[in-house]
Image (cartoon, rainbow, N blue to C red; front, side, top):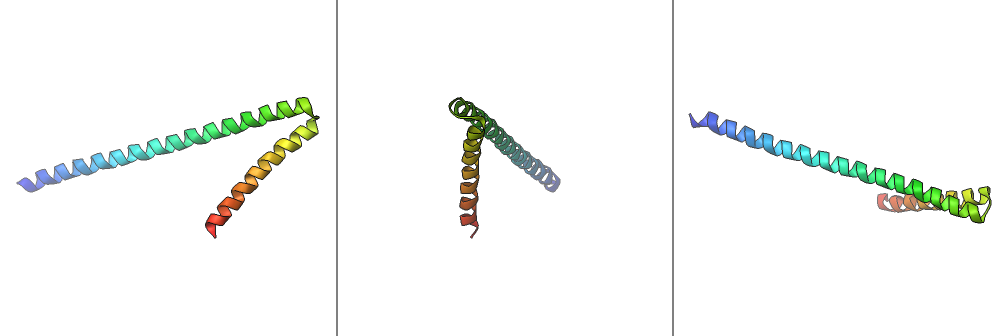
Length: 87
């Protein structure tokens, strides 16, 4: 008689912990998505503001080259850093 009651209690506890794990995973995913969006918007605004500043001092091609070189160096350093971790 007590067996079915214990089974129901165990199932509800398992379901509750499963819901908590799903909520935690969803919160982590949304926080990661929000952080990625913030980085993308920040990088875009940084690029445009740097380009506008440099274009007022230099010509169009020079400003584009400097902003492009900055992002190329940043991407290259990321590639080097991740390659070191893999090997």
